[in-house]
Image (cartoon, rainbow, N blue to C red):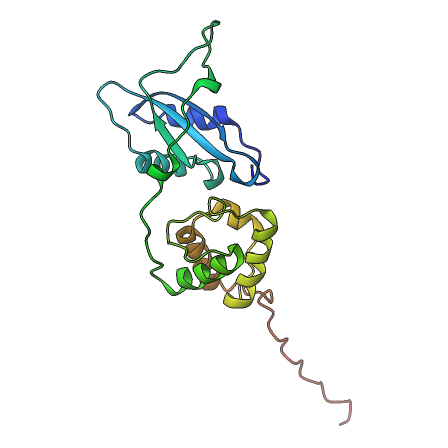
Length: 203
């Protein structure tokens, strides 16, 4: 997905390490640019895992692009006649219900990035918690964003950073980090100090 190889079993293993999770299954829902990673969770007895908590837990162990876009909590997994999880029978997530409330950009970096995303994606507004790819972004548009970021912020933002820091908030923090480190778009080229000319012999 999005140019990255994702191993669902690795995500499932990380989820099972959460104390509120008894079992987990991970797969993809949607087509083409709308494909998203989904996790189905069977909670531990008496537990009620929240999507935000699960996502935050995964970010401690996995890169951003391996964090599911939705978490569906179910009582038990549907099984095939051979006793394996029937992944085709797993319920689709309710994307509209799972969507986060709009949070306006709060920092200059977030505001600048929001304007770039809105223009590149052709949408009206972008919130701090919005995900570039969930809004319809793809690799070609990501390249345009990186170019616009270079011009607007004067930093050399790797294309991979947009995949690894997909939300506006996280990408803004990465841009701020690059600015603080002096990673300018010009490669932090500094003028060479002039060498003092040695006087000619007998001069």
